[in-house]
Image 1 (tube, rainbow, N blue to C red):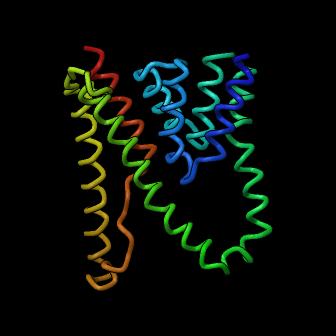
Image 2 (cartoon, rainbow, N blue to C red; image 1 turned 180 degrees about the horizontal axis):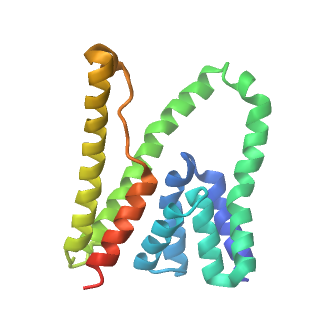
Length: 207
């Protein structure tokens, strides 16, 4: 039954995922492609929509995927499956965290999990980059360079860098080099980047 399958799949993802929504993307991708629920291209589109809409990306993806497979009820059971483990685990941790952090083994485990999460996120980002921009999703893929996607990516990166540097220069003018070095870099709003990339996509991909 598709409803039970959706619930159990996202329940498993919610149980074993660490590192928040971005850490879940790798597991969601593997589960969705294995079950044949979406193609690689469709999944990437879902990730883009989930990132561009309000709410946690993992919850949005579960909702979208569940809806695509089984309508509103599918969206509900998939969303429930992915949030239920986190809800229960957070309640348990909230009541025990002070005592648990006293043990060296717990601290060592948390320290070991951090680089693993970074690795998962980077691996997923690299896989998506190769698929979206170079058309390489498997070892047997011939590949097809998407120059429009590369151009949009380059423009977004350039805007972020220039915005950050302009913020540093303004702070330096008012606070001096010493204080400037201690302050966080100014970052461009993700909303602005999403809107700008969407407009560029409408312009470039319409031809």
